Image 1 (cartoon, one colour):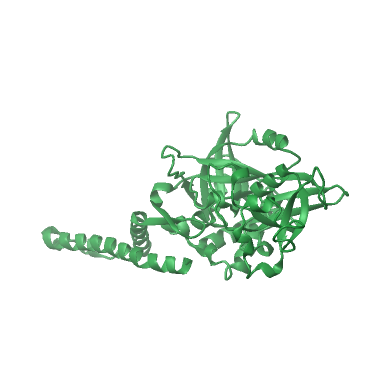
Image 2 (cartoon, rainbow, N blue to C red):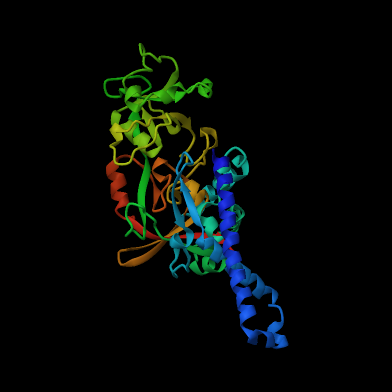
Amino acid sequence: MSLFFSQKLRFPVGCAALLLLGVASSSSDAQSTTSQPQQHLTAQENAPLPRQQTKLALSQQKALVAQQISYPVIDESQSYRYSVKGNDILSPATLPVVKVKFNQAKLLTVLSNTRNYFQNYADQDPQILRPGLLGSQGVTIQDVLKTLDFMIAVLQKDIAHGRVTRLQDPNFLNTHFRVIKWSAYNPHNSHQKQLRITKYAVFTHPGSHTKTSTFDTPIYSLKSNTNTNKFYTRYTKKDVLSGIYEPGGKEEGKVETLAYLTRHGLEEALMEGTIVVNFTDGSKAFFNVDRSNEMPYIRGVSAEAQKRYWYFRQVDAIKGYGYKIDAKISILPGVTFAGDVLNIGLGKVIVTEYIKGGEKHLRLGVIADTGGAFLPNLHQLDYLAGIFQNKQDFEEHSKALPDYVTAYILVKK
């Protein structure tokens, strides 16, 4: 469906560009035939533009055309939702001269893991090659990869030399990167201009390998032979929790039980995507969402009433975006955002600017995760805050983080 969709769009977009260029050309021709003084230009005025000026003129003309073309925003089923114009949301900018904060080693890890995803899975997951909204500013996938490669190289060199990385210097960033300001576009709130920053976390929860009176809510894993038989798409969360997979249930034996949690633990796991389970026998394990029942997330409906249900897999780290569980990007707190990977794009490097304690702050991270609430979403990012023992610790930590920010996207020049 995605291929058909892109093919449908290619013709009208191309035509729009040609029409705009044609109008510009016709206007120029009309002026040359009606304005006689143009026939008496000096030799110097008739000389062709220098090469750099010619390239600049063409670049400006292309940018003007791109700005006039509406970008079709799509949802997670790759269906058209609405259209926006690139220059209404994205604009050239300069970072303020404030030190950029992030953990160097963590950022290097997430940048490298994201770059490796493009390298290893682009053929299987062609959606990550969509230019998206940034295409309206002339940003290509090659630009995204060049940005990741350059940042990785700089971090590797700076870390090897035991110095504070140059990527924390706003002057260095302004020199080597295009800085594109991202103004929020919220179809439900036209007054919102700053990006909303929500926070997500991985929580540790007690659990059991067997069902008990306390740990009575299972999390399940789909067996490998369910790739062709999608029986699980028929059942809502309520159906699953009614016991259809438990002994005596009508679908007994079709899934594997990974752990038993409290109901609260399950809802946290479904919301955040990953949890750490501390088992009663002293062992612990990471679990990450694998496949859903393909029922959409419904905004405005409580977590308990959602029909969407996720099946899990045991993993070795916190996992972000990926077209399948074995391919998901390993991510780390403090440098990872979940966002709209179809319309904004995987691997976009984001700098957030905000005021806290009367001082201006800049933080840097990369879009390496997503979720149903972000497809589509041009007005929000979700910040991976950390691993916490409980909700109270998480909320206390989040008090120091902003709710709204001015956001910038960095693209290597």
